[in-house]
Length: 113
Image (cartoon, rainbow, N blue to C red; front, side, top):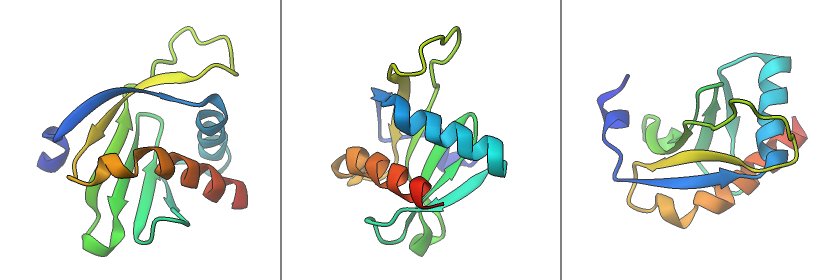
């Protein structure tokens, strides 16, 4: 693991809405992973998706990590419509400003795939 990913600036408990989480899981099942998705509304940002982590990187700065959604609480999940608890790790000082809109953007990008 990259040293940069070992030391986030901040860590938050978060929830991802079920639609977004399920879209990512379906895309990974259909296309395979890791899957790299460019965010449409956040120029230069891309999310690298796999089963364990969704890593948002700045593709214009040598894939510098911006934030990562990790530790998805899916064990024993039997309701596909409920939000998924996870951990959000911030690696960039401005990541908190886009943490919500980046997920919305990810959903839109996946719909276009």
